[in-house]
Length: 301
Image (cartoon, rainbow, N blue to C red; front, side, top):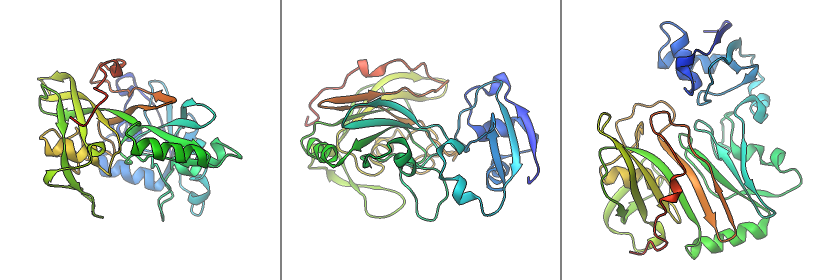
């Protein structure tokens, strides 16, 4: 689809990803077709370029323009051309940004896709802003930024002391009826999929705790609050799948399908003198300030 086109988002597409809304609005456009649209066209919402994971609102105008060769690298560096980067909290040492699903945390070599790291100089001009945590592209939620080297060093020390608490919301498959403490060791060697291996992880900072909040018998799914202290790559996704409760829509550790996003959202981070929180917009679940269901301070069991 190299031509143009324009649609208005109908009410039944409220809150959908942009690629899903396009499939609803365009007869015969499947998942592969939608992917080709983003490869071949500029996809605009209210005149601004957006990526596939952007959440649309009823009444917004979606339009397509042919992608002009040679301009992709330049356009990808402008955050306003892609997804809005929301500031959740800030003080003199730290800032917390909200990463939408579909957006990279770090700059990816060879990719023109948007990333939080790429826009840090524009968000914090004149400040050596340092990205402190990472989220997978398909995961949404909080990214912590140190506003200078001293703050980054404080964060590293607090992590080693177990003083950094990260809470996630996840929708998982199956009915999780009681709290879980997952202590399984993970093999994080450089491969696409992290592999659980026999034995208990000796470092309690690497354990995963999951607290059930609600469930849906109709969908055979549960909403859980997950906490880690010092995470490894894919730790939550791999641990939950190993426990028999993969994250909904996770194509790597569960059955998928691959829609470019999964039901995993970093909703809260607590440091000794800084905190931030943000809720996901999941229409299937009534999400309240769930961190009131606080997990125990001690993860050492």
